[in-house]
Image 1 (cartoon, protein in one colour):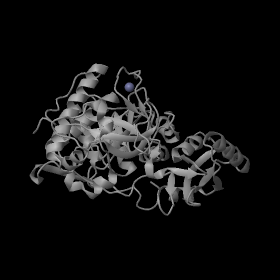
Image 2: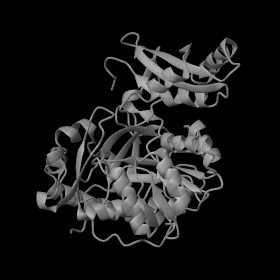
Image 3: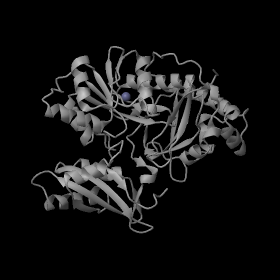
Length: 442
Ligand SMILES: [Zn+2]
């Protein structure tokens, strides 16, 4: 064990003052800088090449002068990021590679403790306590980090864990009836499927013991922070409060929102976030940008100024819950999903905000293809509710033009066709955006 990681005692304070947050982060940063310089072959070389010395660490305020790394670099040079000998590694995780860069990450005993501690703090944001019984509806195996992280976090919290995992909806319903969980951790589209099965079989989900749904992997809020369609559906069908989370395997972190639902709270002792523009310059406070992360107290694979590829806003205003920690907005989009239309750029989520607000729409999927080197062609396949049609399509086109500043092609499709585009065979996550461009732009 080293000074960089040290103990993960359960902190009792839920609210830190801004001074406390500053001093916690400054100390964690100094420990990380010295540790990475000494132990990580990658950072030793990388920081030295930038003219830095292990004996004169820049302050946190000067962090912006340090070089950044990204997913390509991490996946190509993984072994050089590792700071510990093989015998200290206790778990190996992989990402699904859904963004084109499958990654391998290794964790030590201290890293597993950090993972559990992080998740414990996140569950506390969702007001979970040792009194809760939590049904885990996510896979705990297949080398994924998420399920294990939730399990460890609930152990740290002292809650009872019911590990149903990625099982059939009927088994979840039977478990809810028999073991009476108070909360469920799961993927939104799967939780909606469970609700559909409940409705088909006359199971009273609203009257059940479940009061909270911690939603992972898919957005439940629009970029303007309101619940999106699936978020609203879940609250209605389950009679439970929905909590959104943001998670990343590389950062070994997930962040949960509190009851106010105004962004996901950052844990200052574990993570430092910045936002930058495409050229890597810091964006103005509160402006959208690519999240750049520095992870504190990681032993095997700490990261300094890592470009996540995720675009969001950092929120610094105090939260109604009383916490003064920064929060991140819902993710606006991924860097390689950025669309280019007649000189302007936008994320599919901008279109989704308009689509989600359209009550006539039963389901949709956004398809994007190359039109030219400078522009993408956007097609939205829609399935209308009964009684809607051409007139509604015109209204939707007008709304998209006014609010998203684009005029996509809107074409009608059957519910089955849209379902097969959203969930192709073997897909792990439902997708509302299908990128058919021959080369996704960076
Ligand atoms: Zn809050």
